[in-house]
Amino acid sequence: MNAINERLLELEARRTPVTIGLIGAGQMGQEILCQVQLMKGVRVPVVVDVSFERVELACRMANIPAERIVRATDLDTARRAIAGGRCVAATDWQLVTALPEVQVVVDATGVPEVGAAIALATIAAHKHIVMMNVECDVTIGAILRRKAEAAGVIYSLAAGDEPAAILELYRFARALGFEVVCAGKGKNNPLDITATPDSLAEKARARDMSARMLCEFVDGSKTAVEMCSVANATGLVPDVRGMHGATATRDTLHKVFCPRADGGVLNRKGVVDFAIGVHPGVFVVFTTDHARLKHGLIQRDMGTGPHYLLFRPYHLCSIEVPLTCAQAVIYGESSGHPLPRPVAECLAIAKRDLRIGETLDAIGEYCYRGSIDTVEAARAENLLPLGLAKGCVLKRAVPRGQPIRYDDVESVPDTLLARLRREQDQVCFGPPAPAPTPDGGEPRPQNKEPGTRNNERRTTSHEPCP
Image: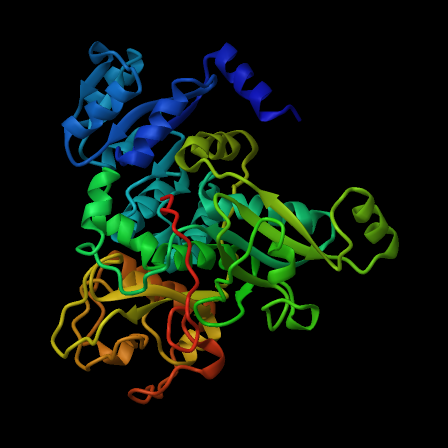
């Protein structure tokens, strides 16, 4: 089997490139489109966003001549343009899933509700789906992967995103037979669990980005989402609610993220976590009992053990995504995908005292932040998944720092996302338990949330890297 660069050159020579339908022309989509212009054997024949102008801006950034861009609102116009070697600009994402010329669809929207519809339509059209929408993945990834397998297509996380970068190291370690102690990522910005778009407005303007998006990084929601995705793709679990988020350096990661008996912070092996003070980069801490291999690791300057570090000092985000698209089409493989049954859950934790009658807003806004725990803990406490919180109306007050429960809301809005989640729960866990969860209650002592008085967060002065 040839290396992927050689396979792409072969496709270019045969004039049969991998064809990508790109949905979302924001920062992520722009980088994908620009990168593809430098590659052989890959094309993006159609780009979709909420306006033609946004698509055309992305095309200009990618140095696509204006005369090669065709606005299309119907399938026939789009197909004629693609046949003529043009790039289609569209505002209806359903055009992408309907185009026979598209082999793989990239969801770069970042909106869970939209991602559910895109993924389902893509799978129904027997196209591969590359999910940059990790918020959607942690909510319904297992059922989407199940449907993709039934349709004979690939459901994949996106290369360059931290979950896929972590999985690259995890797959390497497990293929060699090593025991994975911890898989994680570095987080460089101060973790402010009470952050709001208002408090970050000035920083967001300086960085020319959405204040809501920046807030999702700063308040810890994005880290919880990413590590939940890793957990559900590997079977590793959060050690405590919210993870430890311990301070470490590149050289101390394997000494910090190891069992307490060996001087680390972990209560057990086989977990996901994140480190403050290490960025950019993702890591896997592994171990082995084999005496000869221990000697070999020492000889390769991996340290004296018993724990060893694999470290990837970069993740290029959207820039790497075309490789996942090629991998799906050429090899029928993913850059990472959920296991059949989730092992972790993203939770919604109240950022402030929430009142009866309030309507919950979006991730990265004012009402709640994301956290993570095992799926067993989430189900035992009847906790509301982070991805389903938006639009829920509270029927009970929720104190600051407490998780929001299904019992605290009138109902979950009946969206496609919610219906797929119900289907996933039924398939993976069977009917819900009839007994309601009692009101209130203190968080489990061993699962104190990072940033509370019982577990003060150490911070650094760096800025986040979305």
